[in-house]
Image (tube, rainbow, N blue to C red; front, side, top):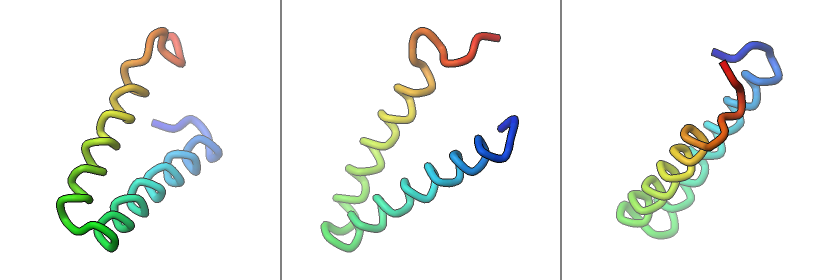
Length: 58
């Protein structure tokens, strides 16, 4: 859960960027290109989620 408005806006911006990347692939390369882009995005998100050391210590 975002702790402030700036963090929340950053999350929304990231989500919008992901949608735009997928839309661009659909327009230029079709469904298969969009699926490939989604796989790349999943790997990017997982790298951020499981980075060592974590961004924030509990």
